[in-house]
Length: 314
Image (cartoon, rainbow, N blue to C red; front, side, top):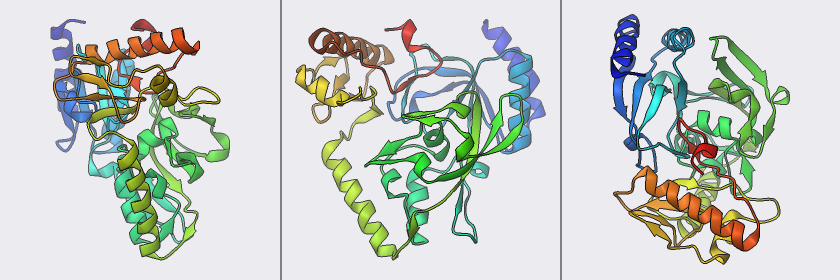
C-alpha cells in the first residue's frame, strides 16, 4: 500500500478521535518492545476510551486495514521494515485499573503492567500473583499468551475475561468457557482483552507476599540474561526444554551482528545494543537448523514475529 493511501486513512480517521487518544503515522516500534529492534507502524493508536477503540476497530474493518495489538512488547520481534497496518496499544491509563472487589476478587485492566499488578496485590495482602512479578508484560498480553513462570500460569488466577471482538462486540467470558493451553488462549486470537476478574489464592501478611516475590526475582536474576531480549524465543518441546537442547548443541554465545544466543540462558537471544531484526531472525534460523540436525527436534518459536508469519521467514 502506498504512503499516500496510509496518509489518506490517517487524515480521515484521526479527526474523529478524541484529543486524549494518540494517533500517529509511522510510529517507531523498537523502543516499545523489550527486544529493541524493528521499524515503524504505518498507523499507531493509543485509544483513551472504549468509544475510540470501537471506532478504530470499525474503521480498520471497513477499510480492510490489518490490525495488530501491542502490549508491553515483551514477547515479540518487530521486522526491520515495520508493520503494514494499524497497531493498537492499550497504554492509556483508562486500561490500567486495579480494583479490589468485596468478594476478594480483583479487577485488572489489560494495560496494567504485571509488575504493578503484583505490587498492588502485595500491598493488599493478596496471595497468588507473585509468579507474574518478573514477566515484563501487561495483563492483556499475559491473557492472550497464558503467560507463565515459576510453575504458575496466568489463567490459574483468572475467573473471567472481558474482551472486545474485532467487530466491536464487548463480551465477558468465564474461564470455563475459554480454550486455554500452553502459551495460548483461543478466544483472544481474534479479539482484544480489556481486562480480567482475578481470584487470588488467599490472603496473607504483606511481608510474607513480598518475601515470596523477592525470592522469585532473585531466581530470575540468577538464571536469565539482563540484556534486551524478547524473553524465551522457542516453546519447550514435550519432555524437555528448548534451553537445554540449545545448550547441548553448543550454541550459547553464537552471534550475528549485535544479536547473540545468551551465554546465560540458551533460549534467550539478546540485543547488545545495535542488533537488527534481521540479525535476530538469522540466529533463530541457525539455532533451529542445528537443533534439528543434532537432536531431530523442530523448535517452534514462542516469541511473536510481529506483522508477519514465522513460516514465511524460517
